Length: 240
Length: 240
DNA sequence: AGTGTACATATACGTCGTAAACGTACGGTG
DNA sequence: CACCGTACGTTTACGACGTATATGTACACT
Image 1 (tube, chains in turn brown, blue, red, purple):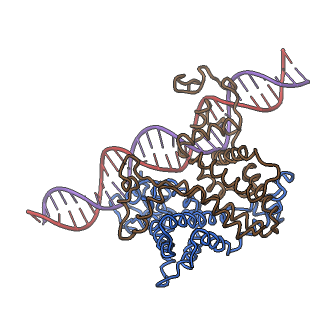
Image 2: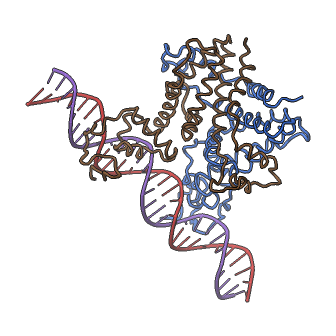
Image 3: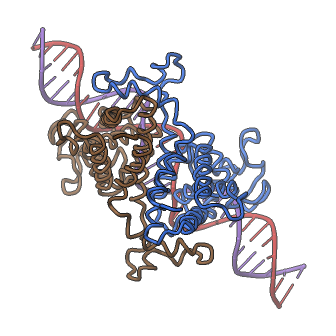
């Protein structure tokens, strides 16, 4: 097969040959992950394949295996990229933050990052179920560490810290996923009820849901994440 | 190609031919979904393919398209199957249940069903993000209806009902996903720290996480789902 | 100048989802 | 009875996918 592609649509340089690495810059884990993230943000998770990602980089699919052990590792890389972005946002941190305020900041920024990459968010749920704790990407583990440290500062013993930790992470994840649920069935439609596809729902069986759907579609109040977090912390981390 | 398979391992009857439907019973949506669910429970989500599911039923992959529009619809069918199971569990219901107690019962049974099908649980997150509200499987919508009805009985106005609804669903989903996160890295290992793979975590950077890991691995207290639900309801659905 | 190694390609295999065309048995109708 | 439409499952085919294996090339070192 030819070692070049159409320079108009292809990404490989004309005359590109094996070992010619670096003509468009060497590959690197960062470049691979950034490209994959871009691709998923643009076209959705189902568009992500080793071959597509390689093409996007002007490289054959097999070249990626040096930087990600396989497709699953690439998905984990996307999670890693998201948490790295979260860390950057959190970097501008007060020196000695009040623990509760800081937990709110983490929750809010996690929410922002996830909503900024809606197609990646499902991976926050699925990859966490596929990978044991110790193998989660390092930025994820550092996030856990931060939260545990803050809860420890709240004066909880270890058992209570762990319980509160699980409550916080469960709430944030659940809330994020809830916020991303699509409500609109047919964006072309102007009539609100048809836009939501309410005609698909049996009225007799689902009266309240049909009534509530427009309010659900308006989206939750932005403060509900914080409100719920406070409710849970009051219960699980009673403090001053 | 031959129209029969090894009767020992294959599922097709010897001499089975096109149009011979019913030799092993006609297909049906229920049979397809039940078989797919069984397959996923047994071998995990990645083992689910149209071809495997067909083989499991003694049928070619294309035969399934009459009962599920494609692979995505099959996944939605699994979600449907889970919520159907939930409805069966909830069926033995008190006549006029106190709303709060009933919400607790729904949360607890949802948790039980999800943990009974750990490989399907991720779909509760992902399919909900892929399908707009009105196209969710009917049993899912009925679940929403039940919860809305109970919150309405708590005397909330519509806005408050919707906010509380989102809080409840977010908490339950988040808690379920949290509970399913695998902690053990190497089940062969007897030493607890090695079992968890703690040697993979940099000590200096993750001291609290390493300390907390064993407690995390022990799993949350069974009542934390209810405790958190109460905390959220107290905040979002203040009642008598 | 020679060589080892890091990096990327080439080739190949089995599996996947699904479009399109086809065959076969059954339930009605004349 | 003969006929036929339709419901149901099969056959065939195609392009894309993940990845094991073998191969090539250019650079850093001696």
